[in-house]
Length: 469
Image 1 (tube, rainbow, N blue to C red):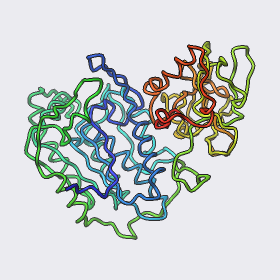
Image 2: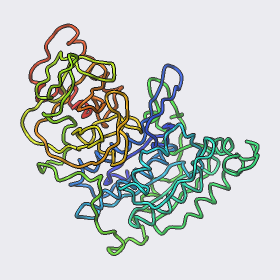
Image 3: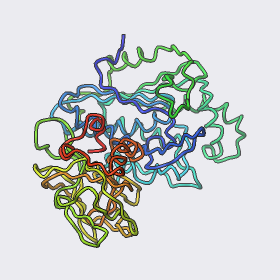
Image 4: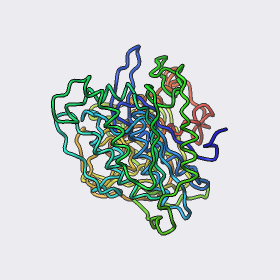
């Protein structure tokens, strides 16, 4: 029996070296397996998909994560809890952390404190709802137990109807090892790794028991394993397995958590539910009642530069046109994900000191934070211009415009109205997108014409990946 059968379930697996909170980090795991962990934009994209596609039927949502995913799932879950407040009915959002009690170390190169999900939920962000200031970066380490527990406390207080639970093994060898290696940072003193490792159960249990919230509980099991989710499917890539799926664990976690949800006695009354409030991350009313996202593209009047120096509108672009993709680079357009001249759609207008670009909110744009969705760029941030310089965003607003066009270049990027953008979106990132479009690149290189039906839609094999739209 599945105690979560009536829940919408969102899961963040482990092995995300940026805790699902950073913007970009590439890690070589050996065996020809390298991973670019765009944890924060990936997590944001998933929550946006859940909200915008399921908001008409959402009732109860469990957001869960294992190990590194346990950290990020907390903040992405809180963001989802904030988003559902804009709905006209109560939607229950719950969080289950698996083996992520807050003893963590993160070098600044992981990009956790430089934008991403934390800038979405912390002040002074316009969309921030947690009044928490992160500690200053010290050397290369700045994320540790006290801050994580403070965030849990603040999230629980801000969302009294959000059930929060955690699971840990008391002798988790992986967490103990990380704790030992970070002992100097945690205790600000010399601490041999073996001694610090032995302190992990004491410090972790103390952190859990000192988290006093009516809507919070934890499960402390006896064992040495790391995480309750041990299926290899969740922890493998390119033939490399990151966790031992042969381990078997039976500690009653699903029964405990489902019982906790059903018998929740926290301060969740009508008075405790915050008044629904719109935020700048909320999407404007869609043009139809169909609860699906609008295509991620550019409007018909957006302009690009051809290799001859002329500037042409999207509506006038053709396959084979060579367009600017960077300061000194041009690339052929070999495919259109969408090329529709009719209909009006919602776009984000980014007005900068150098010009204005209009783009769908989940289209990826190069900014000072890296490659991020246009919808998460706010006033005062910097976006990259086609000549390689950065320009400041003076205002951000929603606008309606005609047509949807998404040209794909061999470079995977394109300069539109001066701003450097990707040809892809948040649903699937560029590396996978390039693989999915490989057949169309081959057709183009062979001199074959892509069927005109693709002007309005994609074949089934491609249309299942919204990033290509």
